[in-house]
Length: 368
Image (cartoon, rainbow, N blue to C red; front, side):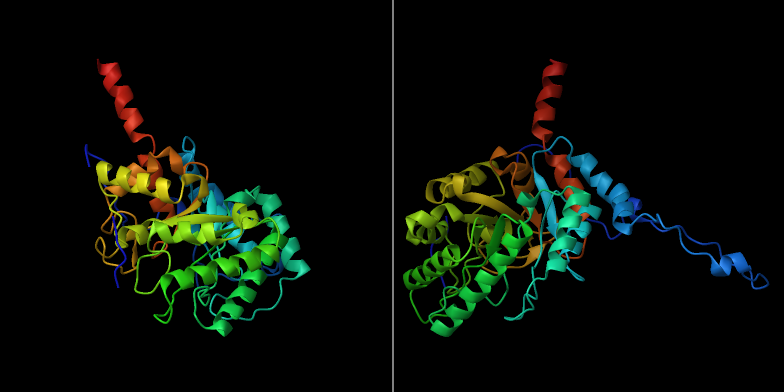
């Protein structure tokens, strides 16, 4: 197990290819090239597109998304991805549904600016329309906090900006009916102790919770980088215990698989996996687990370097069959944050791992 510092059987090989998924090809019908001698008729030139044209997101949902959901139909894992909200937060729902997400993450506003225009009633109406059209479960949406946040900063001005930004983002969740919100706890920047940094984080959580309603705020496990809070399970426990008792029901944990691995928690074989999960349960408690960021790691075990890799392309290959067959991670958002946009392929591969051991046992009994 990490300290504070500055598989059996043959599983399907997880491979991400550079070729597109076949279901995504030809979503829009290709037009036959017109011969040079041909001219448009008056009818062709003036005709309008059909008024009942099927939206692109529905076409993709029925092709790409359908393939992923078919693989998921017997699974209790709610896999999804971090999707774009460009053009309005409502577009995140359509983007998620189009690729078969059962959960998703998004940024509620520009993640690299302190100030953003308030969410409008039009934004809310479009969001509600998207929820109604797609029937998406609001409990499976986990917005990610701004990259500027640093609740552990020893600088009062930085903490004040962080508090105000958190209140704004959690209030946006309220207005949209979103039930969860995730953020990184921050860094001491080497200018205060870890204990002091944790006190700062807990104090800000109290302020945010008391200025908002209902939304559960998730503190993310971190990679154990120098001065960063959250690299040890004990950090998360300390934060929760330091928050006022009346506010603790609105504090939870987001478990980032890449972060815990590079932070020094070994999970690639069954024995070490179970030891790590036992440690998490004893220190933090699975009752506080509300969401997962499911990522492979580009960097080696205990490296303290946070570099995500596509599933099966990094250092954590033995972990994924164990995770997908662990019921403790059922029925909560499990969001991929992997590079290069291979989400449908990765989700399909992961779903194929779910139930694999049960299927093997069943076949063995049948043969006997």
